[in-house]
Image 1 (cartoon, rainbow, N blue to C red):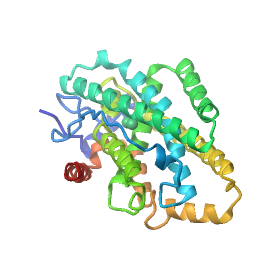
Image 2: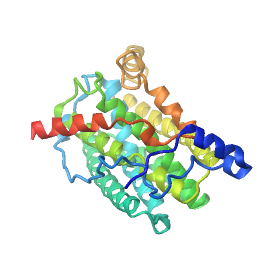
Image 3: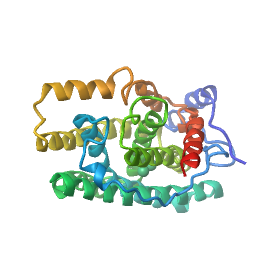
Length: 306
Ligand SMILES: [Fe+2]
Ligand SMILES: [Fe+2]
C-alpha cells in the first residue's frame, strides 16, 4: 500500500531536531517510498502524431509569438528528457520499494516516447520553417554535458526533480480549463495534452527517488533556482531565434499580444506562480498538489474521441 506525503507539522518537528534534519527533505513516508496516489498509473503510451503540416503554420491561436514559445519549449525536450532518464537510472539500484521501482520504469518509458515525438516535432518544424536545429539544440546539449561532467549524480538528480516540477506546473496549466489550447490545431493540442498528462502522472517519481536516497532540501531548492534561470534562458533564446527568422523579433505588437496570452488573465502561465512557489516549502511533495481530476478529464476526453 502506498503512503501519503507527510504533514507540515511532522516536517517541522523533524527540522528542529538537528541541523542535519533541517537540511533534509520532508520526512520519508513510513514503508513505501512512492508518494504517487495508488489510483494514478504511470503508463507509457506509444503514440505518434501527424503534425508536420501544422508545424508549418502558426498552429496556436494563429499567434506567431505563442506558437514560437511552445515550439521553443519543444526544442529543449529531447536532450532534457534524456538527461532526466540518465539521472534517475543511476539511482534505481538504491531504491527498494517495488512500487517506486515500477514507477521508475514507467517514468523512463514515458520520457522515452516524449523524447522521440519531440525529436520528430523539432525536425519537422525546422525543415518546414528553415530553422537550424543543430544551432538551436547545441547550447542545451553543451550545458547538459557540462553539468553531467562537473556535478555529482545527486546534483543532477536534484536538477531533474526541479525541472520535473516545472513541467508538472506547465502540464497543470495545459490540462486545466483555460484558453491556451482551445484555439490550437487539433493534432498539436492532442500532442501537448498527451505529454502533459504523462508529465502529471510521473511528476513525483524523481522527487520520490531523490527523497529515498536522502537528497537534501538545500540542494533541491538550489537546483530549482538554477533550473528556472537556465530553462527560461534557453526557451527565451530559442523564442528570439524563431521570431527573428519570422521577421518579428522587433515587432512590439507581436510581443505585447504574445506576452498577454502567456501571462494575462486567461493566459498559459496565469495562476502558476503559487504552484511553482510551493516547491520551496520543506513539506513539499508533488502530490500535495492533487490534480488527478485533470488526468481523469483527459482520459475521458481521449476515450471519447478515439
Ligand atoms: Fe516528458
Ligand atoms: Fe517528465
